[in-house]
View 1 (cartoon, one colour):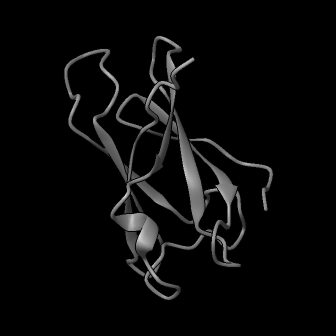
View 2 (cartoon, rainbow, N blue to C red):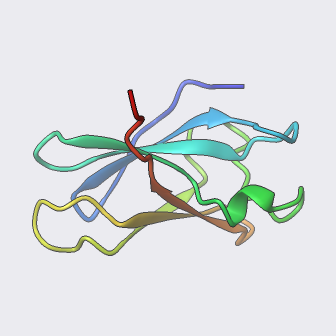
Length: 106
């Protein structure tokens, strides 16, 4: 599943929920695209621990555009640094941690 995402800007970072669904047929974002003020971008994936969250515990994005989600940058607060992680919380308080994608080996 995917939707037409809206970007949310908080503390100098732009957040965009991407790729909804995953293992369960719901609207949990499977990734977050984070862009800093300099235009540097990184994709954050659901943390390994939170990938195992069951339906009902997973943050939901029913409009699939990020509008009902709160994004919180964790770590990396130095000017120009990307966050170490991003916490996504939905309107009902369900939350999940997202971490930067690891570079793929060639």
